[in-house]
Image (cartoon, rainbow, N blue to C red; front, side, top):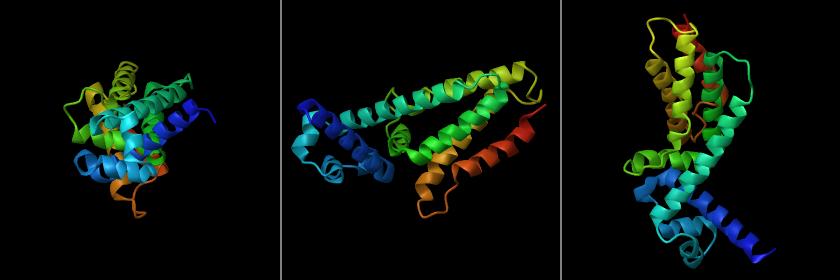
Length: 193
């Protein structure tokens, strides 16, 4: 293994460990020492890659955003769906991503813990939800009583609920991504025209 490969693996391990710490204890509760310990690496290795907790938090968010962009591409690659169906697939895919990727959960927690930071994990997916909600309204899929803003916010609320449920439901009481699909189905009944 080359030195570059080792450095890349070390960086990935540190980002994952930081995401675990941020997801569990939040930004304030996480420490550089615990991040290094969770990664099974020295403080020197951590500070070689990241000069501060803020730097490693930014790296967690950037990693999560790359995962989200991949999810958006995957969900968007299936053409021909009505906008409301597309929005539902996106909600379920994001719930599944939160369930499966600690880096995404860590970034989601950081969005609340560090609201002053400009880079947010939702900055990639919420505009897509808003666009799909507008398209659903224009196509007549949505009841005239519902606005695109309300539809997009409801979809985002379900994603936020998936994030919170995953964190507080670690003992097995949390919703599964399949259950979020069922919740979306219930919501759509009230949204549809």
